[in-house]
Image (cartoon, rainbow, N blue to C red):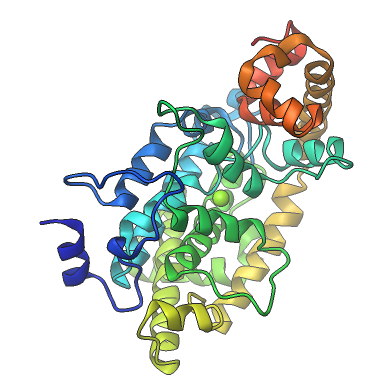
Length: 374
Ligand code: MG
């Protein structure tokens, strides 16, 4: 069955059909059995930037915590896979375009530099007079300018809608009230990102012993998830209880999101992509869960993201990356044609940031300590 027939049978009227894509910057003939968004997803998965997410920090980093707890905490790659998994579940339940959702989810964090937000803040500071740096914009640069996969084409030549999903993330901090709303597929990825990290950051912090299970009971959402799990199972070991609670937290958030989004779609009588564009955000949690998530996030911010162990590592990472950036900016590495072109067309600072942002945590540490590899 071709993509158009499949979409017409399976997708809701407010989903974006693959045949309604406006296409790519460089026109390509359609694929005989993959939709345009399936191809986009595959292009992201096969990119070097995607592979490097395996060795990039989510919140916790190898080196610092491996000795404490092995390799069980999330990397930027496994976070991305959890986001894609949640996003696809939501997309299928709402009958949205799963291929577009998956492509956008796998792409969403591809622009993260080494060492997570510490790396991002450092690069933003170094680029203060050169347009700044943020990971959402960087994802667009990677797929538009830095990746080289196809002869004669710069970037991955993704569909305009996939680029739009990512582009809308880049302006998330400063929404323009007169602008159209993002596609539902893009809204789902944003919600899935938050669902995934709220659950897995709590899980990782417990695994690493940064917080105690009992401390989390001051968070309503957590306490209620634990109560639900205890109501279902008579006796659980500590580890079983933790795992079941994380599972419950995910399940609960997804169910709430689906119920609340379905109610909004009916209430606002949304029956087309045009009506999605004209409406305020529709993929939203209930007011109650929204508030409870805010409380959990405030807890995580204070107790986990500002934990002395995380802060100490942040300082170390910032110092190493700052040194690397300065060396790269001054060094002969710019002879690499991709970065040399960026250095000429934009600025040497931008080219250095593109290079530094592209490497993994361990590559950055090795490069900061030794000769800068090409
Ligand atoms: Mg993310």
